[in-house]
Image (cartoon, rainbow, N blue to C red; front, side, top):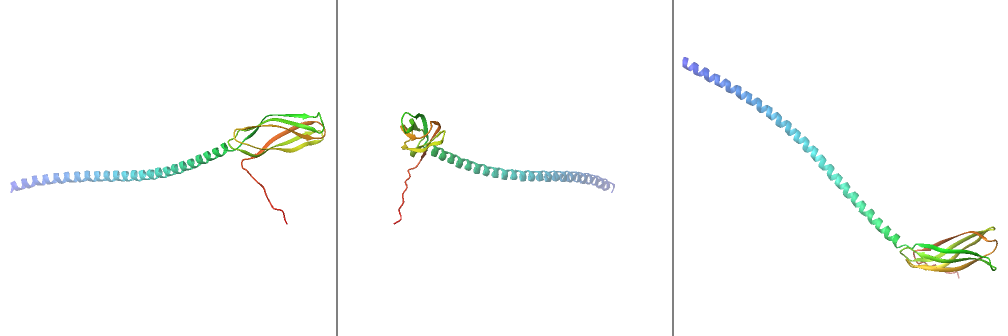
Length: 190
């Protein structure tokens, strides 16, 4: 009996040590499981954050694509407007000489020189709008029609505009024209 008691006591001691070891290992497993849960939560939070950032990236890429489309549209409009401007006429009065000729009656404003179309299109229905002022007021308020000028061409002019009164004190000449042919018509009532 003493032998069995000693063996049982030894086995109880071993069992007790093993139970303590199991308890320690279970505690370690619980600690590791808690760490795994914490890390899984952290991974889940980071995955959520990553998903949010991916959504932001998708949204920002969509905005970039929309803005790039707008830029392309605006560049197309700029090109179209540039082409329109390049094809428009531009009449420039270049080197016109204006002389107040009072050598004979009626007096005349003698105008000569060149007008140039520096633009890319034909100038139609072109004329010079002439205003001249003397001591009495407006001595000349008229138009001198010269038709039109094709793009990049020049036209020589030499004409006189009659007026009365005192000598001319100041004058202005403004070219006016259209970029399209135009016609006018109508009917008379019966």
